[in-house]
Length: 89
Image (tube, rainbow, N blue to C red):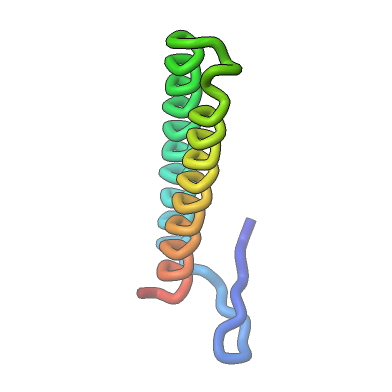
């Protein structure tokens, strides 16, 4: 799918090099998101193995908040990188 962006009041078509760079950013993004999810699941399993869930509720909540923050940060970083590519920087 070809992506168009408004630039100085005109539509700018992405170059093949930009499209390739954006696709690479998306591949890396998906890998990083998967890594965070897997590590979070492992952390949760470790917490639950150590003690019952009711004893770990605060740690579980903090870990979930950390995971959410990590995912948001990774997505924001990827979007910023995409913007740089779109602008040709």
